[in-house]
Length: 310
Image (cartoon, rainbow, N blue to C red):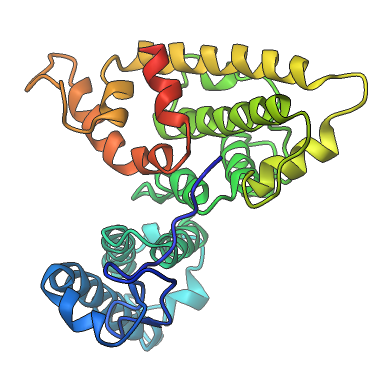
């Protein structure tokens, strides 16, 4: 029920067999097509290339810092790993990492999303306090890559301080959603959980309609695996569908209560949004629709689900 983001040739009809050597994330089906796309690709390509070069330059400088003075403790990748946000010399590098990840997402490709996720995850390892908010983008990236279970594990791992750092695995996607609907609602997390539930709901409805499991090329692999492993004989597909319908209704209402503009912004970024709102929620909705709306757009049936609720 979801569409994986794949790197693609803007002019070709088949999968690309080469990539841009500069940005390394945009694919082309032939060498002839790359020059013809350069005019539209140039700005994105240069932004990605420059941000990557800056990140790599700052990293090289950090790795060669001397450790012979009170102001310099040497290579911070060895002396300050996990605490990069606590030292002045490492902050420009953390900013450069996040900037590179953001620039990558201007290229609508699988490789760009995968590298951005790797960069964001690495940033959490370097600075566990996550002073720049890398974690906020990660649920969206997991979902765009079709890694629903890892997305849910990440969200639960970050929310549950009783477990080791991001050590949650195989969390129950079917569990209740109260922790994502209350006062502690964090929009990127609640949106991600809502989409995971919606994907499962849409898949189960399709299973029910067809009476047989469809091929894994048409059903989210993570969701299908979860269905197979967790659906016992006493619980019918219809029961699961009813549960998911209730949970997704809860999430929709909670997110709408927190920000009345958000759902409309996701299905139509920039449309029907007032220029100003005294609570400031309209700006938040616009930002979230750009960062989190893509995975909803790439999920077949998700926009229709939202539109029926509005």
